[in-house]
Image (cartoon, rainbow, N blue to C red; front, top):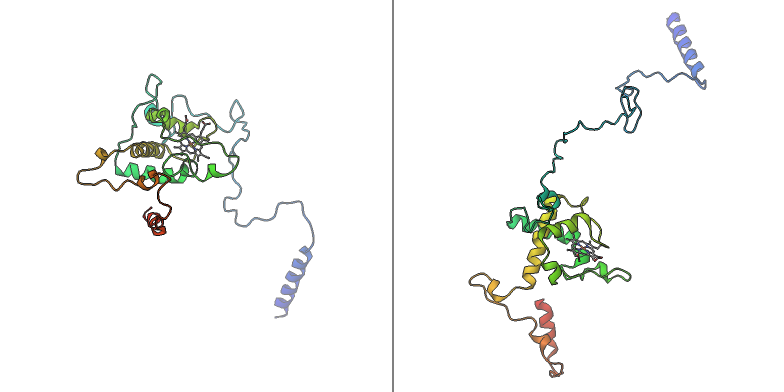
Length: 227
Ligand code: HEC
C-alpha cells in the first residue's frame, strides 16, 4: 500500500514538472492518422521532374474523362467550315423546351424580360444599358449557333454565361428563344386544330382616345383580372 502511494505521488510530481516548460521538439503524436504524409501540393516544386513542376501536363493526345469536346456543333455551335450551325443540334422535344424555359427564366429573363422583348427588371434601373428585343429581324434571322455563341461568349456589353450554364442547357435556352420569337409572331394558323383564337386583347387599347370617357370603371377592372 505504501509503495503504491509513493508511486502515485512520484507520477503526479513528474507530471506537474512538465507544466509550463517549453520544448522545441514536435509534440508527441500518438495517433498520426496519416496527418503527415509525403505528397505534392498544387503549384509546388518537385526535385523529381526535370522542369521542377509538381503539376504535370497530360500526355500529348489524351483527354481527361468527361472532357472530350470535339463536337464543334454541340460545344461551339460551329460547322466544320467555321460557320454557325443553322439548327440546334439537340433533339427538340417537350423536355428540352421546358428546360429552356426554366433556364431562361433564371438567367436571361431578369434583363431580357419574360417574352424576350428586353423589358426585364434590370434595365428598369437607372444607368443600365438598353437591352435589345429578340423580336427584330436581325436576331430572328440569326443562326441557332450564333445564339448559342452569344450565351457562351457574351456579346459586347452582355456577359458570358458559359460558366453558369452547362452546354446542353444553353441549347435548351436557344430552343426556347426560338419559341418566344415564334409565339411573338404567331397567327391564327399556328394554333392547333380545334383551338379557337381568344378575343384580341388589343381591341380596347386600339379604341380611339375619343371613346366615351364614361366607360364603366368595372370594364378596366375586368380586363385587369383577365391578364
Ligand atoms: C445582365 C443583363 C443580361 C442578362 C442576364 C442577359 N443578357 Fe443578353 N443582352 C444584354 C445586353 C445589355 C445586350 C446588348 C448587348 C450589346 O449590344 O451591347 C444583350 C444582348 C443579347 C442578345 C442579342 C445580341 C445582339 O447581337 O444584338 C441575345 C440573343 C441575348 N442577349 C441573349 C441572352 C440570353 C439567352 C441570356 C440568358 C442566358 C441573356 N442574354 C442574359 C444583357 C443581358
